[in-house]
Image 1 (cartoon, rainbow, N blue to C red):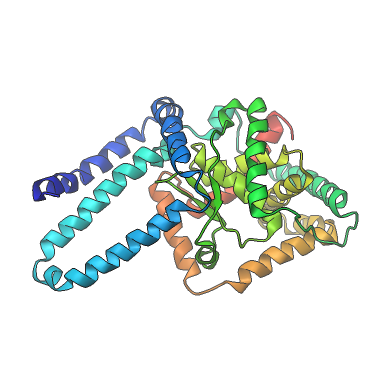
Image 2: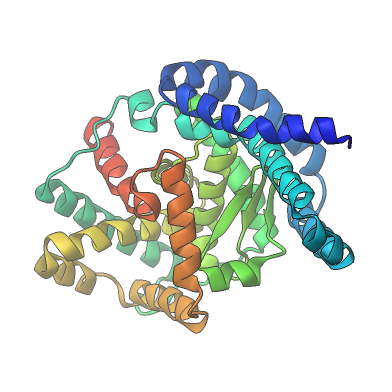
Length: 355
């Protein structure tokens, strides 16, 4: 690439950032022209392009690019030390190109209208409403657990493979669109990440590759949670970037699914968020409700806790802090705490429509 072209791309970085900041002030326009206009067409094209590949092409692409970057540094280190300016110019050129592609392919969804506005629900709630929803979820989760296990002391063991769960997640989205057409999902591209082990050490259940539009699931996570994670990641695929929104969407899709294992995944996940909030707002009520869960459900929760404890490491907080900073830089003021904000959406939806 000629130096003049590289300079032009590098100099375009600052105007791009300013343009995105300006566009972010107009979420109604982002909603109409990007999230409901450009993005559905572009994202479906990417899923058509990469979705049929049986493994994560995006993960492989990241690996190849990382190897090429290391090779470049190794072969040109002496030249870089002698002439650092061209190297830093190249770095800015790459950052500018990545910034452009990221926002074109997916990133502008950070600036769309919040899902609560789209659905006409209020997300503020009282302690009493939090308690009421938690009680409802405890009752339903206990009922689903007994429906599956026929034994209150037995944890749920999921009989499906990862790929079965991904196919069933797609079916769940085909069903939910009848109730909420804006959740329509075309052309499945949902896969186990090749980086499942690194994701586990980082503390993540999955991610969306914005450059290939592949929804990546950490396949090492306990199986009873996979359906909920899959629903969450597809929520990102259909254009919702906010973590609270995709947690909420994941619950809607999996809780409406005809399969009881999916319903169980939805309710245990939503209940975990509600109980987490309740443990702060009303510790005594939290203790009472948690004690009221079937022993088998508590065993599933313990299974999840023990799973993450096995992979705890000194770098995990750094990864989560970096991700939180990334979220804040992309219009999610609460950062990683926005995951728990799904509780407000759950209560607001229950108040408006009822679960």
